[in-house]
Image (tube, rainbow, N blue to C red; front, side):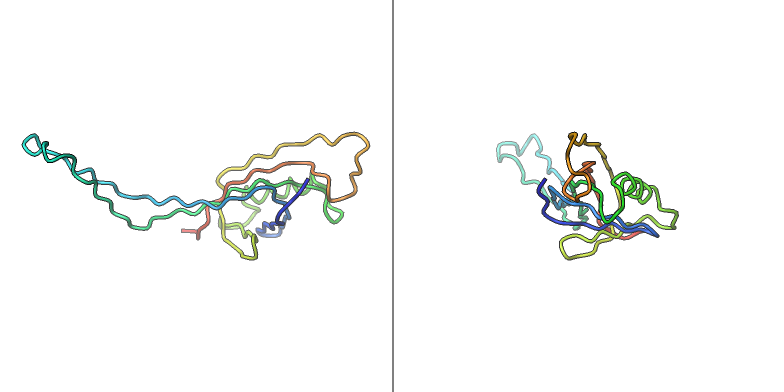
Length: 146
């Protein structure tokens, strides 16, 4: 399985390395849209142009498709459990997870995750880091804790 980037998620005493197969950075700008009404007497002039107020209320999100494999003597199952522990607070105060991705570090908050177990064919070498055991789909919101 080809991977593009290694990402590292850290929170409290936990740190997990995942290998990405797909990444996307998304932004959502909450605009205030004000449709201007047309009265009966000025309908012949046509539709009024909609007014937009842009307050730059942008939410940045990351969507990552990754996989977990045995790594440095740690089993894929242990890495999966550590990942879930981070998503459930990792026994620390505060919700931010540190994400190192694309040579930058972000404070992120998990919004949604899916972990799917893969069935490794019999006879496949399982001691290498090239054998994925779980695919993990992650959706994070980038931000700071309020």
